[in-house]
Length: 274
Image 1 (cartoon, rainbow, N blue to C red):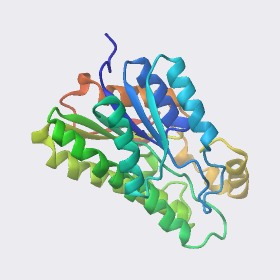
Image 2 (image 1 turned 30 degrees about the vertical axis):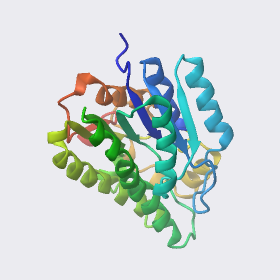
Image 3 (image 1 turned 135 degrees about the vertical axis):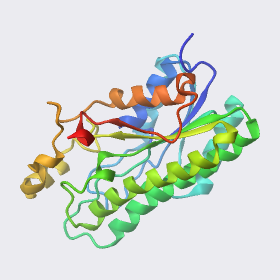
Image 4 (image 1 turned 45 degrees about the vertical axis):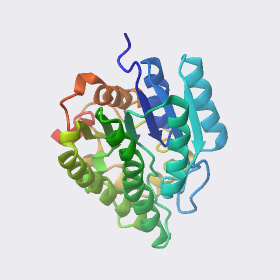
């Protein structure tokens, strides 16, 4: 029996990177997937964001793994679009058991960007998580069988190392600290309903969000940040792989973690314990 047999998992930001990894690997573990992604560019984001072709590739890979998937273009900043996409998935699969609040933009570091970068970060990384939780909760509560909510955090939420004062960078770090507060509130309020809420904090992950030509240009422009020893992982690895984060997500969604709530699980190569 696979670890997620019979479960339906709603994943935001599923078109590529960590989100695609979560979708494909959870499908291999028996889950049905409801996947969304914005599939368009946010102007203050300096690297190319995902496309509809990327989301279609996630669908292809999930189905190739033997899984079932409902995928929709939706924006976490717009709760109504989230609710509509989730409703389509629930209509197909009959339920939802878990949310992976993964959608994110990182980092908003355009030199000379105005304060719009701050607000875009807040809208996606913090309000988007809140919208995702609030869209999912009515189903979990009505089903009355518990559930799991896992939020993608970051080592940046607990460290100012390597963060300059560009609006988007400050926003990113503040939001990743903020989702811990969201997690604690919901974890506390939902214990009697057996709905578990946790955060996974990755260090840098080898995805298109981090590994791209634009990010290379940024690190060349700001070598004092790129070479800051406080942003280096203590373990001898520059980046972890998406599967490393996915493994933590699978555990927290599975019944193996049925009594794990209000926790912060670091996949950080020792970053927090330096």
